[in-house]
Amino acid sequence: IHRDVKGRNVVLECAASATREPPSSLARVPIQAKLIDFGLACLYREPRPPAPSSARAELAGTGSKKSGLRSKAEERWCRKKVGTLRYRPPEMESKTSSFLATGALPSADVYSFGVTLRLLVKVWLKSRGVDVKVWAAQGG
Image 1 (tube, rainbow, N blue to C red):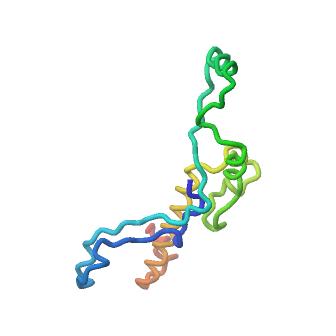
Image 2: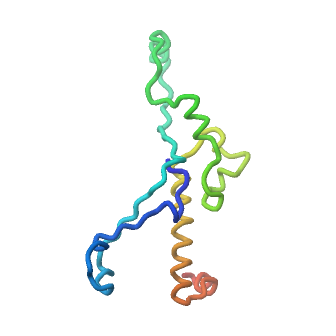
Image 3: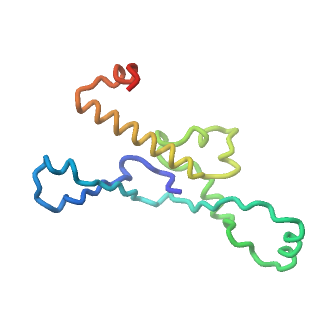
């Protein structure tokens, strides 16, 4: 989980950026968005369903560490409230949320990406001289 998705951490790569094509033809060139800066990233592991009682007894007898579980340090790191406040999901700020129990989830990155897209559209509309409040009131 990235945990800090925002405009500054997205780089756009244009396939024709190295060529000398006129700007009018660049409108048809595909653009790829790439996420950078994984300094706050956290490894997400899908929660494992509880094992049947017979399997638990077998695992208890082996004394081996179960694979797929996070270490205590990883658990603490994934529960830290990090990232840019403006892009954090509301459940990360709530004191009664499941965030405290589960730590960072992929849905947090989805929320941050949505905020990033919303700001991108807002800036794009303003650059075209569109009043964003009027546009939104009209169902835009």
